[in-house]
Length: 419
Image 1: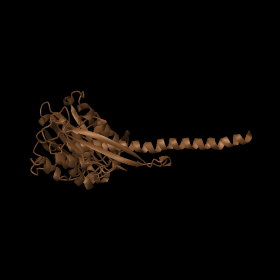
Image 2: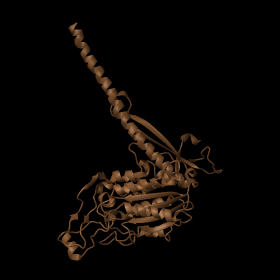
Image 3: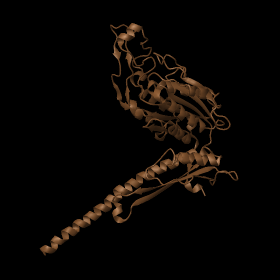
Image 4: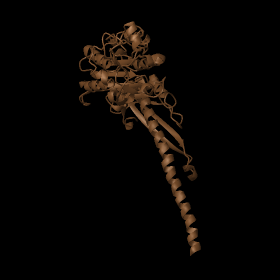
């Protein structure tokens, strides 16, 4: 009996080992396949939405969808070579004879296994499909694009310009009007000076529909295109007044009953407020007679909560109900490598006027704004979490702005709408 009992233990151990391998295969291998499938679905959605913007031009729609697929700007590990996206006629939506009103994208991947190989399964095949309708989202929009041209963006202005240009090309001038605003305010073609928020003119180009030629190329004569093309960088970041200026432009020049949209791009936390900017050493302030006084109260929310006050303002202008989005302004945010300047701090200021070395109290990044980070603030400013685009890498602005455009004008529909 003892010998038989000793034989059972190794068998039991082998059985447990087999069970553990099966569990490991399920957890590790199928878990990895699940993650890849989710990535594929996100890419397929983006590619279908992007392609739908180019309809009714079938060739352009297929080419644009391919460029945003796994074989283009959005590679996914283990993805199989993508089939050509199909331009299709969707049911229940008008489609001209010989034309197309939708784009369908299929993406797949062969995810290699680690533990499941023991059971003869060397890869797991996953496949996703996404279908977008071109005309379904066609509606007029008044859009104010706010771009960050602060000093930290100095090396990335060209990337920013490319991103907004991509955005403009994906809009429809027959429906959509666009304004351009800059922060810090002032002449977009001149770098902000020692007092970067001395100007109150954030508006670089008012709402217009002349940004594209009939063939879809940018119109260099457009005020929006000209202002975008000459951006000069400098100064610190302040959110709230730029948002307020964008909203004022949409109300003043916008069309009645047309959906208002703000697209707000920045590369860091709000770290200043108008008339309360980054300061040189106090000796320099006094010696040069620099303007450092505060016309606002130091208790002003934009001083104490430069990020939070922008969040509050963004909430105040958003639609009161998603059943009627035209009741407010939809806010998108684009965070450009925001980890470069994450923390939100009380804005710096000097408590004296005129400035003299004696009796001046300099407050400079003294207190964190309740631990709030730039990425958190931008997510909270957006009207919906999916409207907050956070990119960790530089040189990626075209992708981010194309996603915003696809969210504005494209509509994902059930896959069974396609034949």
